[in-house]
Amino acid sequence: MSYVGRDFDPAHPTESEVFSLDFVNVLQSGETIKSVSSVSLTVFQGTDVDPASHLSGSPNIFGTIVSQRIGGAGAPGGGLIVGVTYTIAYTVFTSLTNIITLYSRIPCRAIN
Image 1: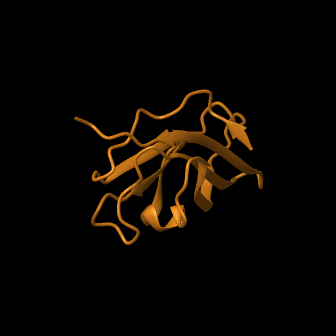
Image 2: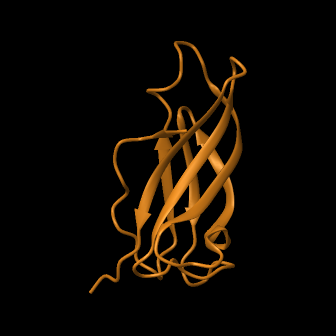
């Protein structure tokens, strides 16, 4: 599992937002993403008893970019929790039968 090198900008607890990671730097020449094996949302720092409940819908693939909506207050698990930093990880299958996982972090902050 590889860290992408930077965290996402802080998320607001009531917003529903799409978070995307680009696999371009980890794919071999000519290699493509065939499918998304999994998307996980876990707690890096803080407390959230069910972080995966904030995932909304299915992931999407746009070339080398994989995206997932993380729901706000209207999502099945409600909004992200202020003060919690989440880790989002995407695992993909590629055209060269590789399995690659990238992750980043999403801090949740109240926006005044």
